[in-house]
Amino acid sequence: DVVNYEEFSRNLTNEEQQQLLKYLPVVDTAKLPDSLKIMFDSFQFKEDLTYFQKLLGEGVLDISLLGANPEDCKTLKRLA
Image (cartoon, rainbow, N blue to C red; front, side):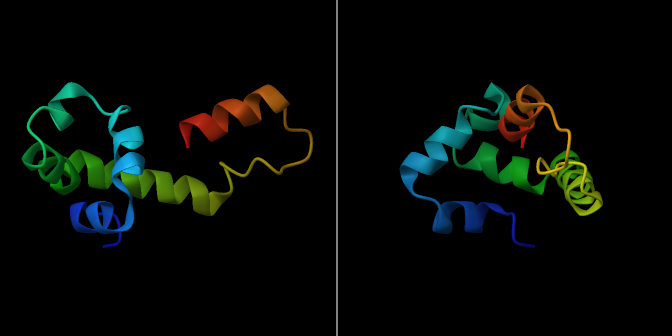
């Protein structure tokens, strides 16, 4: 319920939004804001977000684990 188009628009500055939009495929940014609204409402987005939350909850994305390779940590930060 927190990750949706309204929250994206309200809580992020225009600059922050533009930084995030560059990571999206053209289909999600071609006809703003409608294409972005559709993306947030899509089944695939919701499914991927649920999977991401599961990984966070399981600690898979915890870069503070002992023995973590610094390069792996950089990659993980970038992907997250």
